[in-house]
Amino acid sequence: MNSGRFDKLTGRKRPGTYINVDANASPAVTYGARGNVLIPLVNNWGPNATILKIKAEDITAYDAQLGNSVGNILLVSEAFKGASTVYVYNINKGSKAAKTITLAEASGDDPAVTLTCTAKYNGTRGNDLKVKSVANTDSTFDVTVILGTEIVEEFTGLTTIAGLADAGSEYIDFTGTEGGDLAAFASTSLTGGTSSDPISSDISTMLDAAENENISAMAFPFTDSSLKAAAVSKAVYLRDSLGKVFQIVVCDYAAADYEGVINVTNSYQLTDGTQLTHAQATAFVAAITAAATELVSNTYKMVPDADTVIDKKTNEQAEAAIDAGEFFFTQDGDNVIVEYDINSLHTFTSKRTKTYSKNKVIRVYDAVSETIRLTFPPNRFPNSTTGWDLMDGLCQTILQHYKDEGAIQNVNLATDMRVNRGESSGDSVYVDARIHAVDAAEKLYFTVITD
Image 1 (tube, rainbow, N blue to C red):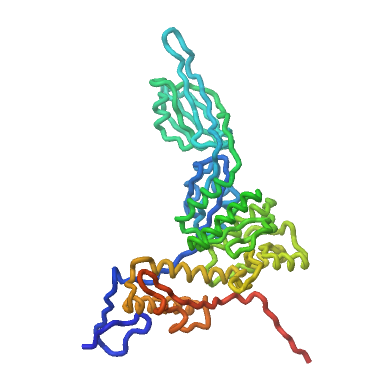
Image 2 (cartoon, helix red, strand yellow; image 1 turned 30 degrees about the horizontal axis):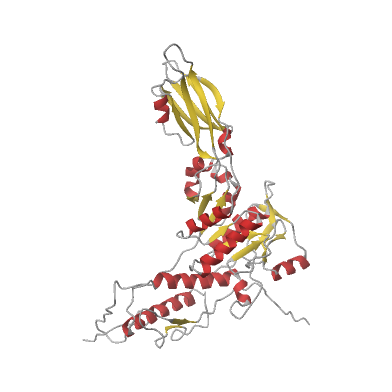
């Protein structure tokens, strides 16, 4: 019977039973996924320094944690135009609104009965909370929680403060006199909630928290230049030192000159008249960047529900913006479209050529890099001829996959990604790889000959 080792890509010609015996479990190629975007919010409500993973199909489940209908929060709704999952990072370091209500005055030996209502979260949004209690004919009480002008909770048939505390409000923590009975009271507002602006350490904490999440792009909807500098510096570190394949989207940051940073320099108006700032437009750009695969360019992509470009660029301004690595929107009739899917890299070198400024090309490189990272973890292969042969086979499988889907071209399976046997020894393996990404046809030149 024919036997021996086999190559997963080419197989063997003769019938037989072929077995690969390798260290640990038999590894397979693992391909990364895209689609998740991170949006930091200074929302004046909600859990501080916490990532909420929101999917479009269960968006209303997070109303109480974000203090409003999630769909009405502009940045989140813009992000859902492109991303399947929006990771919201809440920055909310202020103080909680509160109110103490006297339900019964002190009388004789009986102390006063008070109910203290404390907002669940920090922030000025807590000042929009109101509570009221209405008496029923059966000596019970119905307590209503109002946010702004909307009733968000109602607890019925209560008799004691303890019963209200146990009712499980998502907006207010109720405490008060031990053993105290409820009473009716008019609508009462919570006060004293405060919010504070983010600082550089908040941005670092956010990016640290994002390290272990599967995030393809991040919006940075802040205008403070020091915060942008901190975010960009951290993004460069995450890409270059930790191998995180994601891009950060900032606005009006001329200092940006890096393939991992997209610099948005204008914005758009929605069909309902809402005008987005440049900073707010980063949410949509980050979302479509996160959603786009290595096969997709966002050049000329239309912005849904938008009809007017804000801060339009003339032809001369547009050409200068492209040279400066700016991402901007262009008017196309009654529609708003992305002009050119480029990142901020505009200083080119032998290691960072002009192709690196194209986001589609970067997505190809990132996809291949992520596949390599997932497929070749430490301590899976023996550092020997046996292991090298297996790794070469997996390298060929990776190349074949991206070649077949049209992400790379000019592929030589035998030589384009192979273990360097002369340099690999001890616990170190060196793999030489050559990748030629396929760009999108974004500039079409026709020469028309007439009689």
